[in-house]
Length: 258
Image: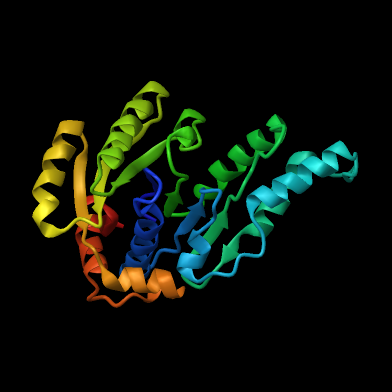
C-alpha cells in the first residue's frame, strides 16, 4: 500500500452523507484493488441497508453488553477487559468480498462508561491502521466533532444540499475542526442534489467558506429509486448521473493516486 487514507464524510442531516459514502465505495471497488474499511458512525445505522449488507451486530451492542457484564461482575478472571471488548468488536466486523464494514450504532446510552469508550477509541485507531482506505460516514450535526471522534484525518468531506442550513453547518464544521484541533490535511465541500444551474453559486459559497470544492452531485432519479426500493447503491449503473459525478470527486480528493 503506497499510502493510507482516512476520509470522514460530515454535514447536516439529510444532505446525503451516506449516499456519498456508498458511491465513493463503489468507485474504489471498481477502480482499485484495495479492500476499504467503511465505518458507519451514525447511530441511525443506515449505511448497511444502502450497501445491501446484513448486519448481525453493532459495536454499540457489543459495548453495551460489556458494560452490563462489568456491572454484573460476570467477566472472565483470566482475560483483561480490554481483550474481551476487542474480541467482541472484531466479531461485529462484516467482511464482504471487496470491503469490510463496521457499524458503530449507539455506543453510550445512559451513564457513559468511560473505560469502554476509551478502549473503543484505541481499538478503532488500530483497526483503521490496517486498511489503505477508511471511509467514515459520520453522524449528523456537530456533536462528533466536539467529542473528537473524527480524530486525525487525511481528508474531511462536508456534504451540503442547496440550503442555507447546509452551508451554515459546513461553516460551523470548519470552525470546529480548528477549535478542537483536529488535524485534517484537506477539507472539501461536496454539493449534493445540485442542479447544474446552481453549481456557480455552490462554487462561490465554497470560496466564501474557505473550503475546496470537490464537486457537485446532481439530482439523480436512479439514486432516489434505489433508495426507495431498497436496492444497493453499489449496483447503480455506471452511466447514472450521480456516479458520473463521483469520478471527478474521487480524483479531486486523491483517490485516483492509490
